[in-house]
Image (tube, rainbow, N blue to C red):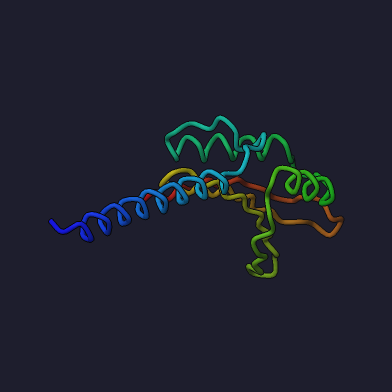
Length: 131
């Protein structure tokens, strides 16, 4: 093998290792710290979704003022996703996404408000997407 080919192969290996290290650092940096609503959920996504829903309903019972709900969700890393007008009833959604190596976990809180500005219905959904 020619000396130039060895050098190019060495440069290629170094470049591939460098890029791989950058990807690992990037993936590690985008991981969000857990919130009380999403921490320590079971590995099985159906069980995790059920437990997350129970936590959401327990923390924000019917009648919770919107300012309490929105402040707490924001503190825990949830961001407004969208509002959907379904038959005249606006459903609001806040989402928190956690990325782990190869998987993305989406935790969503869906709620509706009554005319007094308090929660009239609420639910939590957890989804996972893995490569």
